[in-house]
Amino acid sequence: MTHLETRMSARTQAHYERFPFVQGGERRVRHWVRRLRPFLPDAVLHGSTVLDAGCGSGEVSRGLFDRGAQVVAFDLTSTATGRTCLLNPGALVCQADVLHLPLPDGAVDHSVSVGVLHHTPDCLAGLRELARVTRPGGSIVVMLYARWTPYHAVYAATGPLRRRVEVTVLDRVPRWCWHVVRFIVAAQVGQRLGDEQLKGLVADQVWTPRATFCSARTIALWAAALGLVVHRRKPLFLHANLVELRHAGATG
Image: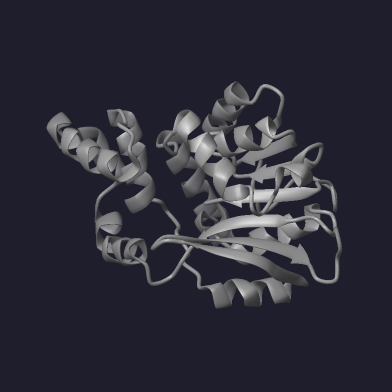
């Protein structure tokens, strides 16, 4: 990586060590089981070795593990790997950068990366690594922020705030403010989050050091450049694209 990319990765690591992504518990485990099942059906997943690149809170990994996969999980932060180990005692969990995975070529049957690559300095490099470690015939399932969505507008509009105000300001927000935010978030996700969880959510949505927004066409161009094809795509309403990529010409 270039010096700038190294600095960006270090900033991202420090950010998510201090403000880890929220934990949704069994609700989020079930949510991602439902979303990933059309891409990785139970019959395909059972007995397969599956990489969770950027495991975060460990709930995506847990859903894969519960459906019979042998899970290999990586994350940039020790906070995330620690949480994933607690939730998935049967998984192999390591701390590593998704742009430089410590795995040989074709090491896993399938790979999953939910909400991670758009936080790296180079989405294309991240896809290249996933393609490298996934065997021909396997699925590469990624969730990436979509362009021209409300969140895209919010992130662009809050750029001046990020440049002038450090994320640690969240530690000084009065508790009554978190009660208001909790009410709004609960109405959207159907779950009441504690103050620290809410801080993590706001830190992720507003202060994350890097957020790349890409169109379906951009993803298709990236795939073609890497010798991949878009096998399936599901737009997530006003938010992101969930995409399954495969090696061009591969079967299985």
